[in-house]
Structure formats: C-alpha cells, structure tokens
Length: 233
Image 1 (cartoon, rainbow, N blue to C red):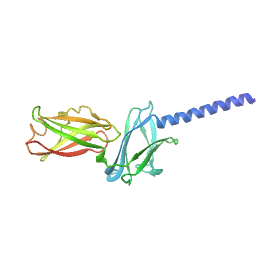
Image 2 (cartoon, rainbow, N blue to C red):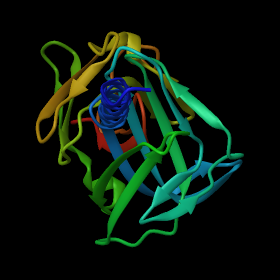
Image 3 (cartoon, rainbow, N blue to C red):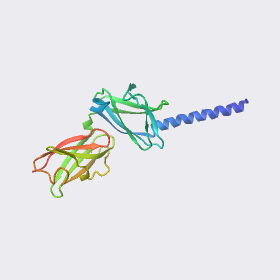
Image 4 (tube, helix red, strand yellow):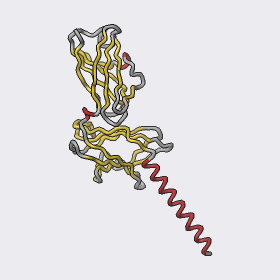
C-alpha cells in the first residue's frame, strides 16, 4: 500500500473516531436535562419505604437514549434494579428513584451511564423535600365561592402540578376537575402558582365555617404536598 493511500485511510479513521466521540459527548450531555431532584426520607422504592433520592431526567434530543439501570452516586454504584438497561424516548421524561443513605447539607454527584461508557451527571446538595416547595397562602373567597391555594417554589427546578385532593371529615376525594389545573399547572423555579378550587365540588356545595380541611397537591413527579387550612367563620 502506498504511503499516501495509507495516510488517507488513517486520517479518515481518525475523523470517524473523533466524530463518534463528539456525538457520544453531545448525546449524553446536551440531549438530556435534569427536571428535578428531591431527597426523601419516605421514598417508595423496591416495594418498601426507604431513605432515597428521587430525580427525573428529560430527553431533549431527537433520538432515544439508552442507559444502564444502575446509577453512580459520588462514584459508587447504586443498584435500583436488575442491572439491565432502560430507554428514554425523544421528548419524554423518566423518573428514577434510588435507595441512598444521604445526609442533609452534603453534596452529591449523580451520574447515568450509557452501555458505551458515556456519562450524564449532575451535582446537587441534599435539602429536605419540604423546603423545595411550600404553601405560600390560602385564600377563602366568599364572593365567588372559591378557595385559592398559592404554591411557592424554592428550588431551581420547574415542576408540574397535576392533581388536587381534599379531605373533610370522612371524605377524601380528588377535586381536580373543580379547579383551573386543567392538563397541568407549571410551578416555575423560585416563583408562585395559584390553584383555584371552585365550590360547589365533590366534597360539598360550600365549605363549613370553622371546619378544617386537608389538601393534597400532587406534582407530575415527586412527592405530594399536604397541608391543612380552616375555613373562615
């Protein structure tokens, strides 16, 4: 083989290799986004309630992304499943709950790994779940017969509120259809969102003055927010 021909083949192989590396880097770093991450004491994983980390990643690329089921936390393997693989289709999200004995205030680097060795990682500090979002206000309006629940985000993640449940006495029912949640209400990072509940609803035609009601705000992913509020006299 002539030297020029060998050099051309060598350069072509090097170019293909560099492109493949660039593609792998783009595939694992730029086409995935972290939607949220929560540290919980009562996360339901593998058939029981455990201390763990619950996070959701979103595939922002145009093709499916494949990762092995096991996750790296601070360079140590966590085994949430059997060790196979899972796929995140383009435009879709995947919730990944893992059992992990974390400590408040500590920093954790969590990494997903492709079968080819590509890595998508993020670093976050453990904070109580209840500090990531909170109930900012509850407004009982006698004029238009509504209860407005103001929810505030104190994290860097955007979450989507999809359901509202309410309990009074022995009744605990979903009342989402009597609210303005629709297909979902977005709660942006460090902002507030207001859920308006209309009366009458499936609980009662009107609230009872002085009675305490329990509300359960459910996000699309993660742990629900429960709180109590007393109807005005």
